[in-house]
Length: 170
Image 1 (cartoon, one colour):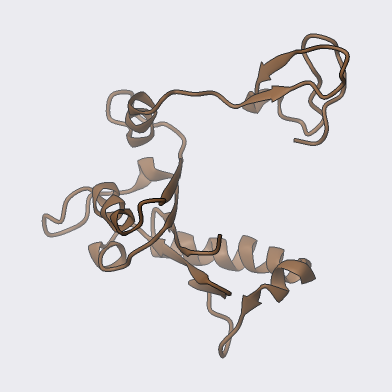
Image 2 (image 1 turned 30 degrees about the vertical axis):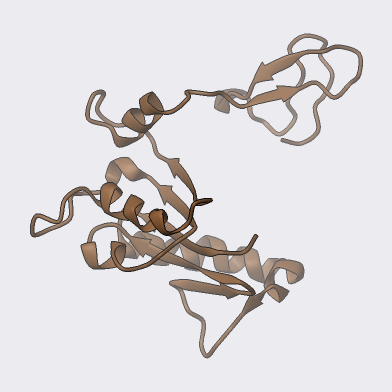
């Protein structure tokens, strides 16, 4: 379901660069995706409008970027690189999580490379979570194998560890 979304990165510059270098070229390379967006005026490198919502790309270095916006979907990238907001505003992750409270069915996705053990936001979130792992089922029909999806094994030609059957592109 389309919704108000926020893609949060460690800085406004990082968010703008990601939009320019990754998201905008991806949309322009896919006529189907591009047709689902609406453009008003010149290219906007901080916001994508689409039917039923928008996705704002923002940095977490300023409390002003984190407050006052109700969102249903939150994507946080490299949260261990977020710095505390200036002027005693507190942890940017805590500020942005408050934006989700408007919607009972809100969703949040957090991604980061862990930094210092014991001081890592992503480590803390993982410890507070169900600690579930993503499992892939072998589609061969020859076995009932399940395996954990491991980053180092992800070559987009993953094979079932039990029977050796080539799994569909992950």
